[in-house]
Image 1 (tube, helix red, strand yellow):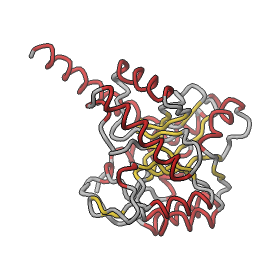
Image 2 (cartoon, rainbow, N blue to C red; image 1 turned 45 degrees about the vertical axis):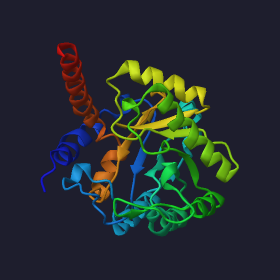
Image 3 (cartoon, rainbow, N blue to C red; image 1 turned 120 degrees about the vertical axis):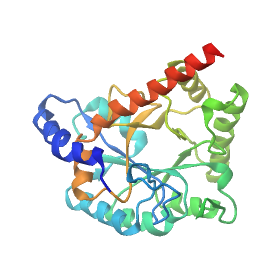
Image 4 (cartoon, rainbow, N blue to C red; image 1 turned 60 degrees about the vertical axis):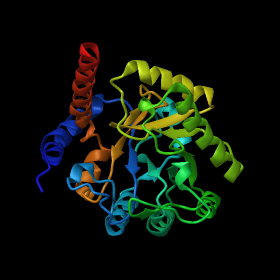
Length: 287
């Protein structure tokens, strides 16, 4: 299937980024994974797929290890970027939602490669027994405890995986606070990180300012979003950009993303959001 973003990345943006690299500021790629499986979750177009097959994931991890890349813990990212001298070939691995295949087909490969990861849990879907949703099983609290004991970090992905922008203030407050408290009670450790569910509404500055205040009030110190790009010292620490990963990311595409060849995608992504936001504002004004 034709992927225009892949063609532009590999044959224009990536070569250009290598030429301009000497002028760039320190950056660290944050890889955004979801499910390590062959489950397409109903997404037919490669751009929107959130699964990475176990074979492709293993290939990606081994390529990273063999090419000298090392993981950086998400919580250490701000200080590393501020220092800016030890971020070459460093990257962060994140997983959204909390699918159980992370434990079966994701973590063993990462552990073998010496990598760490942060998993963001939609806590209503994490139960004593595996909960099945959209054809996929979620981690149990026993799974979470075992992974935590082996070095995996956990953060909040809200309680119900809600679209926060559609909620009333007290409902959003519940989603943030309850998910954080639940993980802390189950693990006996502080939760400081958050991942925004759904496309991040960066075009809605009023909402994002309100959300940032709410996150800080609940004690969150760092967060990630679906805005495309690599994290820099200039990035908002509560809404760090990430690079979406799936089965279509062969070593060539992975290398391009790590080196900045996919950062250009943030421009059309943001323009698309702004157009839809402006249309919604005009429709509300007309109504």
